[in-house]
Picture 1 (cartoon, rainbow, N blue to C red):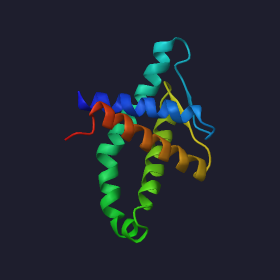
Picture 2 (picture 1 turned 90 degrees about the horizontal axis):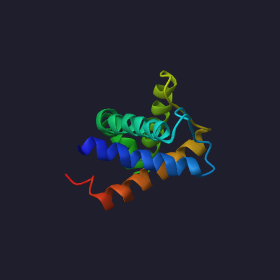
Picture 3 (picture 1 turned 180 degrees about the horizontal axis):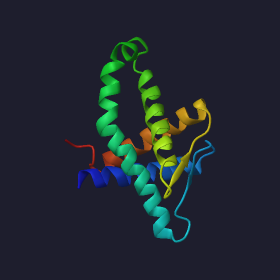
Picture 4 (picture 1 turned 45 degrees about the horizontal axis):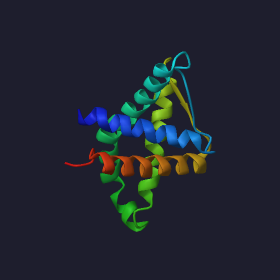
Length: 128
């Protein structure tokens, strides 16, 4: 249940990021409103899974450079997770996440991280 809640929070954060001019677009599920919502939920589930599996490994491996940059390298890790999500979504037919250049994707990753942290804190999905 916790994974579903985190996926829904991240899906809303992705939707918020697509409303901003950051060259972030989600295609797929244009038939009905619920298929569009499922497309965002699928992307949210992919990001939540990558955050649970890949992000801890990258965080440990990049710990020295994260310490040297006073934590700013964590944004690059978030960018990589968003880029990896876009690559995974290109491999399926149901949904596609298209991203822009490096800086726009970095800002989109920052917006998604901030929005999901705020919403997760309000809903209590980040509690251990």
